[in-house]
Length: 173
Ligand code: SME
Image (tube, rainbow, N blue to C red; front, top):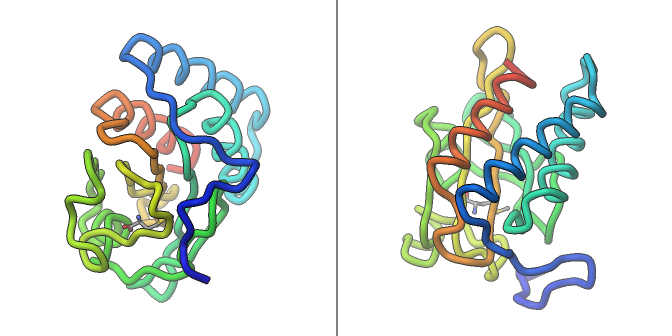
């Protein structure tokens, strides 16, 4: 099924926040996440909760989800919220594959400026900017990546990188 630009009834376009609004939204989302999870051990439960509450408090989060490491050099779709995400991504391919291969956070101001199919995989043509972070487990192993898309360019910046990295490390490392 080809990706469609038509948004299903349950999905809205991104609404951008300024720096102060972002900080407050992350503070509220983080408080809610840990209020819900407590000392929950299940990674799956933590992932689905993170997706739901970040999407609730951050209105520019259009597609939110995890890709999990499979067979050491491939990512497989994990828990997510949004339109249909591609199912498998080889390390090194796309923004997610680059984050997995390099272990570095990927901040993309304009996804359409990347080479489609190699530098960027367009699961949804409405994606205009993206941030992807590697997710590490308790033993330092790569569990996968956390991927967020927005329908506006330049939606993500160093605040998102810092706040998401801190949250993911607190939850999974
Ligand atoms: N855009 C990602 C693929 C995942 S979809 O956005 C959910 C990439 O280029 O790796």
